Amino acid sequence: MIQPLHTLSCFNHISAITPITAGLSSQCYQVSADNKRFFAKQVTTTNETLVSLHAASLGISPQIIYHDKHWLVTQYIDGENLTQSQYTIDDKILIAIKLMAQCHQIAEKPVELAPKAIAHELINNAQFSNLQQAELLRVVNQLTPKLKHTNNLVCCHGDINFSNIVMNQEKKPYLVDFECACIAPVEYDLAMFIAVNNLAEDKATIIIEQYEHQPCSITVDRNLLQKYLTFSYFINSLWYTNAYQKQNNIALLNMYKQQWKKFISSSAKRYTFNEHIAKPL
Image (cartoon, rainbow, N blue to C red; front, side, top):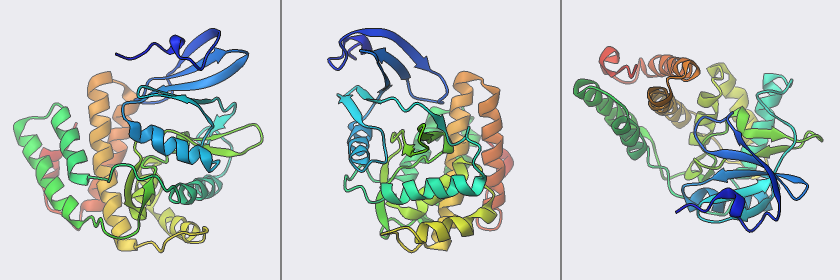
């Protein structure tokens, strides 16, 4: 049973609990208590909490106020996320890559990325016909064997969306939401960063260069990055399909269309499947 938020020991007097609806999945709240504001998130695994603790110790994530198996409470960052900011796209990329490289130095070892398992879960949780499901599984069987899991393994954030980078009033950036954290090659984090922010693929060169210029960074395998990029477009398409089928939100439908179009373009010369049957929506 989940302990109610207002009963947590980190709060003495709560004056307000306000749901944060900007995100697409997690239950998050702004808590006004003891003349301060806090950010509270309901977590489903200890994985996110452990990585968040290490990220906070490095100063790249907000300070942890309280945590248990259901809740993660941090300081509230009063500012805007990178999506809302007036920075140029190149400046946003540089801010994100610096945080990513620091995240990759986290010593905590979360669960290892399991590409096939992730894809199968998304396919099984969505409403697909038997023919459609079979074709999507065939796509998975073509994509996943090409994803190496032996080199450049680091603690990846897994979802460095610009909306998951919050700037405080002094313009210091914080990386938040480690729900998708995993051990994986750096190429996966870079690929998902490009995909989830819908960046033009011609930005890949500058992204790689910026990453390789960070302290303690790793040389990026361009070919593997492209394979993970195709995979990222594919699983993002499935994720948005699942979310749209549950919420019927037009924004989710548009994000699905965006990612599926890029998946088809990225996979055209490398894989063979019936895109009309496999098309999730």
